Length: 112
Image 1 (tube, rainbow, N blue to C red):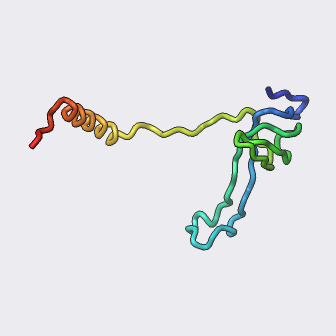
Image 2 (image 1 turned 90 degrees about the vertical axis):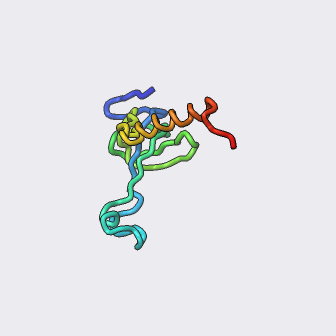
């Protein structure tokens, strides 16, 4: 449970850290130019090892047991990823496939 004392976040709270792994221009030479121009960043979630304040350097233990350091970015961060909106072409293909499979399962295949 996250407890706050002033602007401090309690040890053990579920938090997100941010870390810049490579600054612009430090990436591998084969990386496209538009990628070279931005930093390689890491955002990681885990349990706070010691009390810290937002914006401070902090340490977490991840669910995989790794200990990582970075800037404390948020407390109880939301998972915001998704698989995106449905793709109409895939919905149509799904229906076609279902019809084909039902025909095959119903003995629609001719032996020969």
